[in-house]
Image (cartoon, rainbow, N blue to C red; front, top):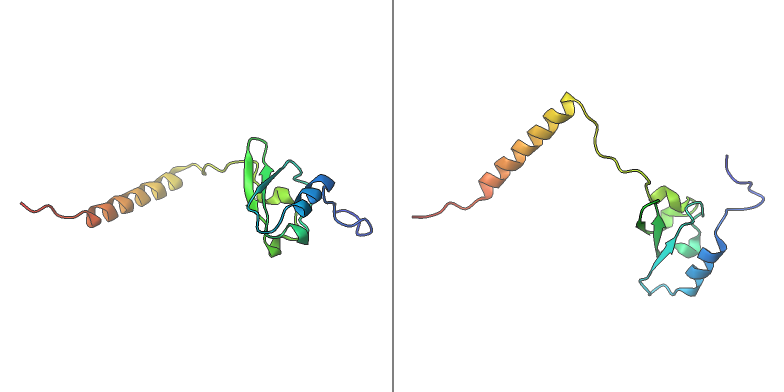
Length: 111
């Protein structure tokens, strides 16, 4: 369920103060735990360190991110891979192609 349009988007007050205090030309990462905070137009051009439960993921805010939540851009789970015979066969084929490329790019030694 979304927030009432009468109230407007939720933006963490401390986070907004930090953004307004920082100049556009400063390249400083603003660390935050406020994943539920919405991205506002004032945040465009800044980099945020959004906490994902373990560490801070750097998120550079662009214009098309306005209106979304900061937590959407910092995944909390790490995708490893799907298992199964089909996946193993695909990975083996990719390794063989990689090895063939390396063999082709090696220079031939002259005697």
